[in-house]
Length: 141
Image (cartoon, rainbow, N blue to C red):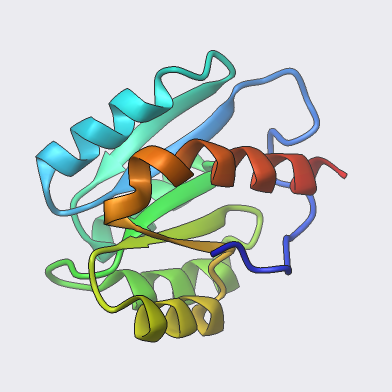
């Protein structure tokens, strides 16, 4: 689910630089799978990975990604709280929430936290690339 509000102007949007993506999930196999899905896009690059919300905040501030793919259920700090903080402190980085939890509940929480989109983990292979492409296009306008 892509939310209508798309913030203008991430660091690399609208330039010839690659779209920089931070992948946040506490499961290494999920991060590896997401990286593989994203590798098909020559103008996108995974600039970093994090295992929980606290590490996501640190990496996002250091790396300044254009897009952050954020799991919800993680140790130390969940993805909804990390998204809430990132939306306030690093608004130029758009967050896409990825979760296997109840779609209706998580989608509402994600939108209220400031996420740009929600993707169910079961739909990642189908929806990840088009969702990121749409966000990227909207942010360049």
